[in-house]
Amino acid sequence: MRRDVFQAIADPTRREILNMIAYQSLNVNSVTENFDVSRAAIYKHMKILVECGLMEMKQEGRERYCEAKLERLSEVSDWVTQYKAFWNSKLDALESYLKELQKQPDIATKKQKNGKHKRTR
Image 1 (cartoon, rainbow, N blue to C red):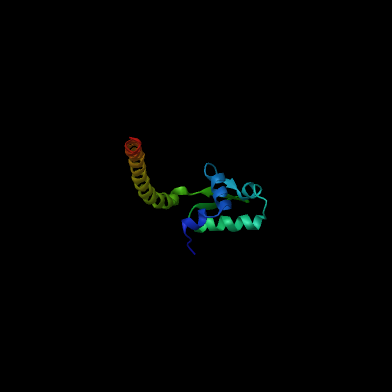
Image 2 (cartoon, rainbow, N blue to C red):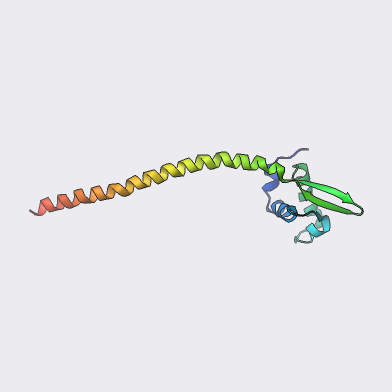
């Protein structure tokens, strides 16, 4: 079964596994000893990472090594980028609106002062 990259990064344990193997391949024991859960549980996370194409397991002698394949994270980056542009435009519009509001109290204050001044005469 081919899983979704978003499913892989949704879990903090899988994200941590990716962080661990991002710069160097590690054997399965080196990865599993960094977690307070069973080896079987970590192995299930690794299986999902392999199914998502974010990790590859290579056999070298008696050891199995985990190697990150982070190219697939570009899907996540592309998805985030479209929303980043959307929210940047919304925040720019909000900033402009707030600047306009900051200018308006000065006008309202002057009118109010002028109004109070007229009443006291």
